[in-house]
Length: 495
Image (cartoon, rainbow, N blue to C red):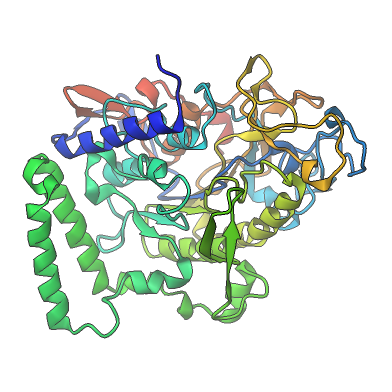
């Protein structure tokens, strides 16, 4: 087998995406035991920490070693001291005080283990996390949100069932992200409704400013003809073509529906917005961010994740099934800490602490938390020394000096796949519970109650009343919602 490179992955992922255009009708296959499942959640909000969130620096702190010039890397397990949470036996790391205050409402998994996918690429592991399968696949694998949308249908016919907030697909590894940010063979009508900038969400669900109704309808008719004449209209299957037109109909219906008000953050009192984004002011300035290669990404707004969390609450309240809010994955930025790990995590914790906690409190105050599952996760963790797993190391991607002499070397800079944290709130999960144990000394790997992606997905599906053996027949074979239908819900996580 050829080595997996970003170029190879992109080529095979693109081929799978094109194959979705030719896929026929995906027939649902009855899942064994599904009729006995009683759902405890109606909606899911996934808070995606794209880039690799270090477990020992967030929700599974180890021995704290403060920065000092001359430290040896093996001495450093955590660069933050631990703090108390609302649950006596659970500690977090400094900078997550607000989330710590709501830990009595949720469950913490400390033993999530990423798949062994060879040379570590963020896009490959994010693909696996979001679809349950390792790329490439012969069929275009649907995103978790698309499966939920297809299997359960909309809660409100005017509200998109699957909404993706905060991730641009025209920066960084955008083409690779497109490979799984899709409904795949299920059809475009179940794909994500994208809102890259939550502060502009209201503009996404209304006709362009200054366009008359007549001109808008004329453009609508023209676009339909264009779709029918496009390659998908000429070469795609009847099902995929009709699914794309239904997706377009759904988007058009939303424009004139009261459901569109859920996208308008200006309807929220300023003082409430500031609970999600402390210090926020209308028209807040955007900042440019630059990756290690000098590429600059404009429109990276301070507080964008916080506004995304607020928007997610409004959308679930308005009838959305699956909402994903991301801190945004861009190579070498945000959680992708190849250097300056400690400093970067100070900023990332500041970005997520208030909004995650406030989302939980808001849902609870509105009586929605019990029926809304909130999942905070990342594709894998990080360590200062180990790349991959201790017994299955992969090629090092970051140089670690013999001595830490500069702050930029102080932090977790390598990809670590043998442990990781997932937070769950609401939706029928236990309260104040911790699952899994990792070693207190390096390697801080999982030593008890390991959780793999198919079982995590099975648990999420179980709260929604979806069996892990649910399948859709495509290309004359069943495609299961968990890998080969083998996922098993972790019942100890459920109340």
